[in-house]
Length: 314
Image (tube, rainbow, N blue to C red; front, side, top):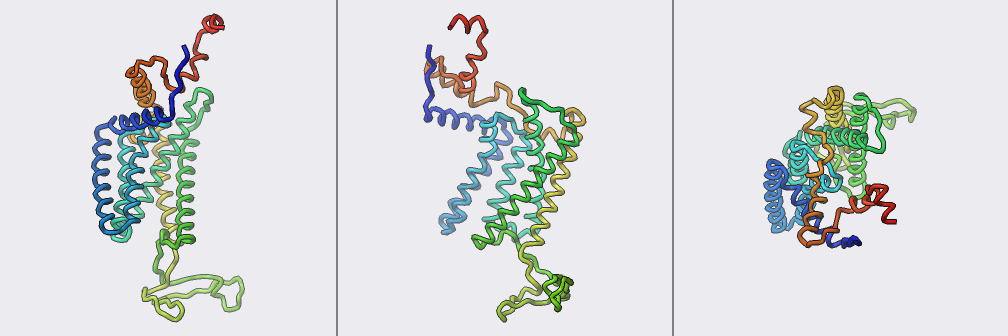
């Protein structure tokens, strides 16, 4: 019998149902997700009545980002460890709601440093996981050494960190924001200060004030426009990347026995946890259409038939 082709509406319905099932899979992460979602919605309502529409749309973005772990798991058919999923949810909340809307970046000096360090750690975990998952492919497999995987994780994390700094710089240049936070310094060194115009570094020390167009800035020093902040962010990203790379190295070396690393490394989903395929089968049973199957199964049916059966069909 001819298999019925599923419509785009059917696929979207199945996808939404699969995401909902994914959200409720682990009790602890679902509780964290639900609590954060309630707080974000309350904050969104508050921002609307305060007339802060930028904060209002930032809350909408946060609600979408909180669903990102579940979307990734459904789409890529991977299982995120509960610890990793909860940390990702808290990271999104801390960066967007606490950091941006509630100004924790200004209220707590180390807030940005903590998040960049955590970002380096998480990005290294993601890079490490990608290498492991891709290497598990049945089509192509390499025998990757622990050192190589640790280097991949480290380089992936640093690349993410660099790209983020590019983004911050672009937003400051083209939209006149202040994502690269400024620093008050009291000495500068530059070849542009050389009186002879040669390649000799000039120095100015004990700077107590700076003036622009004849008007004092009243900052008690010279204003460094983001350079030190960028270097600090890159350094703490480096620290986070190194920490996980070391953890990942011992995880591979011990043949996956590391308890700490296991909490941060996604695995391929078991067939009974593939909620998208499960939802499609449940929908087929509900409608009585036995021929509605996941697309991957439909595409592979002909290849799975025995040679004799395939010859008989011809």
